[in-house]
Length: 441
Image 1: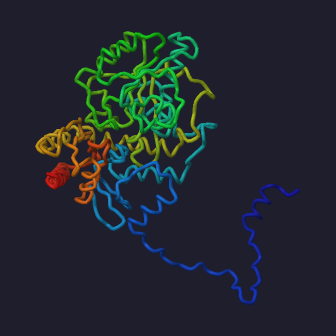
Image 2: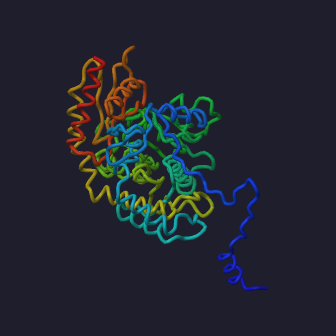
Image 3: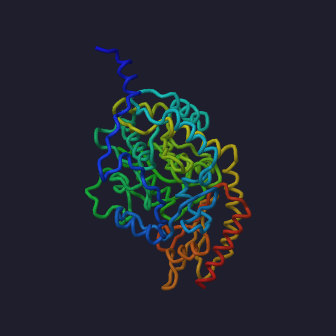
């Protein structure tokens, strides 16, 4: 038998025989080069509706390109992005440092699974340890995966450390929470759109009012509670900012009643609210920290769960994982994304420009704008709903005027531009919003 090296050598150099030409049939026909006709926006909308699931209701804009705070539709119209892919694009669209990291690693190694070590995951884990001080990191891909990981960790800790009887661990959530649309996530939801038609639901989930320390204390006094999970500022609910001191009370109560505080910072974390973490505003350290969205730089799905050893080491081999979680490509992208946030001081930019935009938006309150709220560059306006105006109609008008935002409810519009935005661009955006308000007055 020939050596395998010789077989591979011959296979690499083998050239198949040329097929003889047959009358009327050209041999080796060259492909016809043609540029497919450019689809109109309406064609793009129709194609998605025909071939795709109808689980989203996008604004009627078909985007083709992005750079920094701007995106362009297929017709070349330019917009200021005030959604930032729900804060996944904090660093701006296609940031060159992040794209460069993606390209460089993509040419070397992209995926190994966790069946083997790779030479980048440990680098990423150490990087995040030095940044945030947690002993361990568990890498995932999406926010909902990371939140479910956090709940699993808390339950395991509850059984092995707190001594909760088997299958009795309870987790406390808050009303109007949003952490995804998996079965576990909708089991904790109070939004009928999220949970209707998807039961039966996961048991042992308790829901209390948000921003209510007394309600939390009462819930934590119930037997077998292992954790409390909440967003420091509720995003999908409409950018609800809790009262000053609430997060500090959460921390104190969880410590008092020996329950873990899980901070879902998938949307609020990494500079969005004017600090590296939203919890940093009150000097609070969660027991379990969940990150996502901006950890990806808007380029490649990356999420992470961080905790110290007494919690993280409850889960052993085979008890949790992800084929893609911790892949080399994701790790390099995440480190580049964090480097951009830190080196460009984007948290401070968010804090500084957030104060400006909040002041300018307050001036617009009247017959159309009812309420303005937010922190840093994580803001929302509440619209006075009428037959003429609601959040959807307002966002459509904004898009026509060159700014993209999205309703989060019928009367709430979230305003969250990339953190690389400049003061000049903020004022240009405020002018567009003000002009749109006048259209509905």
